[in-house]
Image (cartoon, rainbow, N blue to C red):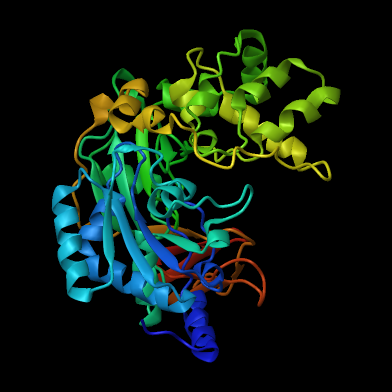
Length: 455
């Protein structure tokens, strides 16, 4: 294995930082910071466990060599000997293609995963592929494992060749005429993406454009209602649904109602805990205890809050396990919020090992689609070349963990693809943002730069 010395590593990390590479799997954490550590294993995460999504599938099919190049370079940077690509077993043709490509390179493994949720959770991947468990409240790198989304690795490889991140790969699916997967310029709006899918097909209300979208997917997606909402480096999908769909209404339901219903209806069946992926790995996450605390006063919060601190917010508890359709995930979020306002609050001791019945409690994706009423939308989202691209893009200055970038241009400026639009101060947590199209600057605010194609 080729290793890099400290000075070369610093130069390569600087290139990755300058290109604006961040975690494309949803976290948006700057990649150059994750690569500072030493690890013995690097996992390319292609599990893609959110229902209906095919973004990672097409990244791996169409950018196979870039993904494997990124995996090899990441392994060199952290000193890892083991290099693994994790992909669903059901992707038969993809698995075969990856194995052929990995065999040509040598010293790369392709590991097949069951079609369960959330197989792409990094703690789950680390346990299932290495047998290790990151410490409570810690990270995979604490046990010598670096996990990177496959799109992140492809972007890393491009960055080392001098290309900044100017596009995001995403799936547009759900109640649309023609689902698709594409690489689109950063800042492409939800309205443009919906139009490219042939429009909304959500029933009688469709004529009134009465849609909602979940950015990222049904389980962990963020609610989008604005046609001008822009795609960012972490946008893996826009799942369009009717506004009265269960996945949408649960996301939009006010906190006060969720608290009141949970306080009145939770019967402590503990299904939320018994199916929790982190609990099944042995961590001290017990959502039913947090739900029990909804009926207590704030003076009793210390008894329940610690049991939600290690929640990964995957949604299994409330969108799959709970027979009362309650919101234990939100209760865990509230407990983390409350704990953040206190000092010396930490999680209880965990079990130290995975639950003996874990294998029998994994959530099949087929059953998850049924529970979420998504089977009617379960159609392929084939690759689509979106040409010409959008005429206007709204490029946010914050597409990453940390602080927003400072705009570098003014209205009227002419830009080319890859030109710097916003940057963060040296040493600040964040990442630069680059122009995704050739054109001119139509408007600049603190939050975003709007570009119009052409000169």
